[in-house]
Image 1 (cartoon, rainbow, N blue to C red):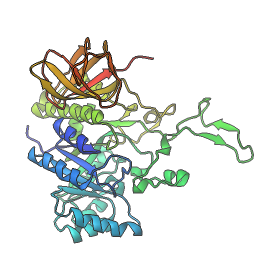
Image 2 (image 1 turned 120 degrees about the vertical axis):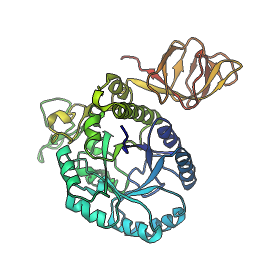
Image 3 (image 1 turned 135 degrees about the vertical axis):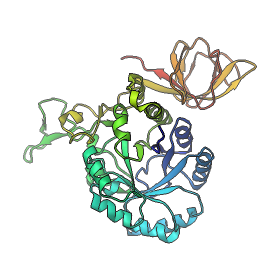
Image 4 (image 1 turned 45 degrees about the vertical axis):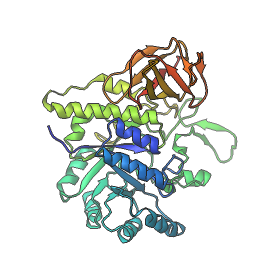
Amino acid sequence: MKSNIELLAPAGDLDKLKTAIDFGADAVYFGAEMFSLRASSGNMSISDITEGLKYAHNLGKKGYMALNIYPHNEDITPLRKYLNEIKDIPIDAFIVSDPGVVYLLKEIIPGAEIHLSTQANMTNYETAKFWGSLGVKRLVLARELTFEEIKSMLENIPGSIELEAFVHGSMCISYSGRCLLSNFMIERDANRGQCAHPCRWNYSLVEEKRPGEYYPIEEDARGTYIMNSRDLCMIEHIPELINSGIKSFKIEGRMKSMYYVATVVRAYRIAIDTYLDDPDNFEFNDYWSKELEKASHREFTTGFYFHKPDNKDQNYLTSSYTRTFDFAGVIKGYEKETGLTVIEQRNKVSIGDKVEVFGPNPGHFEYVISEMFNEDGEPIESAPHAKQIIKINFNREFNPGYILRREKEVE
């Protein structure tokens, strides 16, 4: 079965961009050093963007730049200057949420492909037609839409307009991320890329005339995380997604690690390809969801796709992530003369640890470390230093870019 479905992955920096492409993304989205809604992620310099797009284009993939802040007056002049600096870079599309930014793009980069950010809260077909009339080619749906609403939208908009939707990652409790909590509480503007995620904090109730007396909102001595959504996960609903008419399946996570990007992209890539290879006989494989659980995550929900979320889609007890595996390292090369694999460490590994090695293809390789060497070939017991070069003999060769993970000890 042929399909034009796009798997779109986050690229918080150049390394994550390349990892997303290597592990199966059809396209990536990234932020510049300014003007995107992930100001504290790595983001990318102009030289990084140029290199990253060259890497993607050489493999037939695409790269989209997020320019989705809601700019204030003082942002316009620097934004105009920045657009002039990047206008000759072959960026495949720009993701925007503000009409003024649309006009700036049309003025400075005529012919630029424009995608509407989910931040614009696009929830109905009349709004979709409005944005289409401005030349916006793709609409990133508000997360608050069901499959039924998406179907109705497609029936009422021109066929030239594409739809993109999030299928995995963190959810905002506020309407498509239009939140003022961060501004109000610590003066960090969520709509200009500085969200502190106060929706994840633990809250109790205080009565005005009884300062210092904290009452749990639920009968729980720990208080309650009243705005703490579970993470979106649609891996078990690939057929519904593909048959919905959505063009691009988007993974959230520009602030997540290279390990997270590789794990999530790989699981969705395999699931999508399995369905497309034989839709009539498709069966969900629990391996895909178990792989997703090996990346840092909160409990999962299907969001708004099937119904409006209820109390089962919130986590009232903790905002902490579940993390059963640590990102142990990235394979950099292989020494044929010694049989040693060269690894750049990312978290401490020691002799006796059981590790898993995985790449873009299904399956993984398990190995208990019996010996380990430093960069000079000297035996070592552990590798505690960040990005330390180590060498291990796996009795087989892996391609550069493959990833090591180590199961966390049960506490």
